[in-house]
Figure 1 (cartoon, one colour):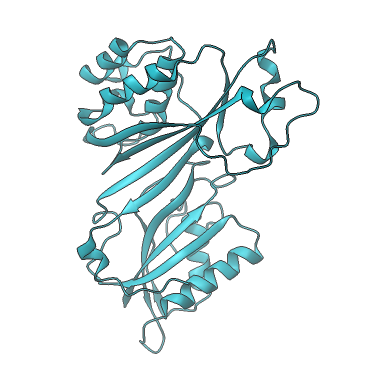
Figure 2: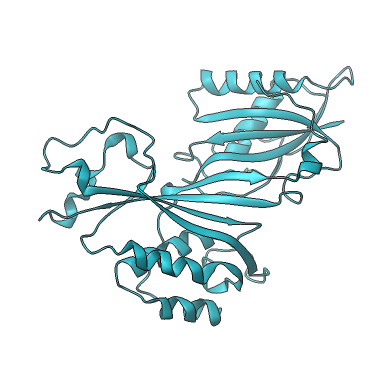
Length: 308
């Protein structure tokens, strides 16, 4: 048996998240990222295959620019698989099936390595676009979203958006805090430890768009200058359920003047579901990207490279 670390990216639209929903690897699950990868690994015809272990769980609709998982495989002749072969074969399957999953690289790693426990940090990015009203009514928002950005960023209409207030609020989240207030009520682990360290929370003005040519809607009199993009980066070792999305929601509410830094400070200092400010609405999943899962240089020194 050999263990393989797989680096991958994906667009989460249309999937039920990364984690397989079926009870065992023997039952195919085409609705999740893990399920699709396990189905692809079966095409290698291993004599033994474990269930994939994912380094970070992402909800339905969340994307990943880089994340990892590991899997134990045994080849019929007991020789290790060439990591490059795993990368090529999985990408061939996803390409033929028109699936938005891309294997970036595969490594042969020690059997003691665990992609989740060994991860030093995880960095998330939330893509936000603020559109000026220009006299338009709210129900025109769908017409204002370029089709190539559909389900790739969160668009809001707002003329009074003070990004400096959001940046000031970022400082409140950094460091060690109890984030129970920011844990979604849908969490199945209500007794989970909620004290986490946010290493960095930062907002980059005019975040780069994924597309250079915008299909500006002809029926709406709107200019590119009316669109302001922001990338919100959140880095930490671990997060509670929905922590990043609810953190971003609080930053947006601060920029819109719905809540103050004092309100946010209260939610952090009095950790409870009851402390959540109802004026803040959790942002949707489709603007969230897992950017990076990082490991120590010591761990990296034990990886046998197989990137294409």
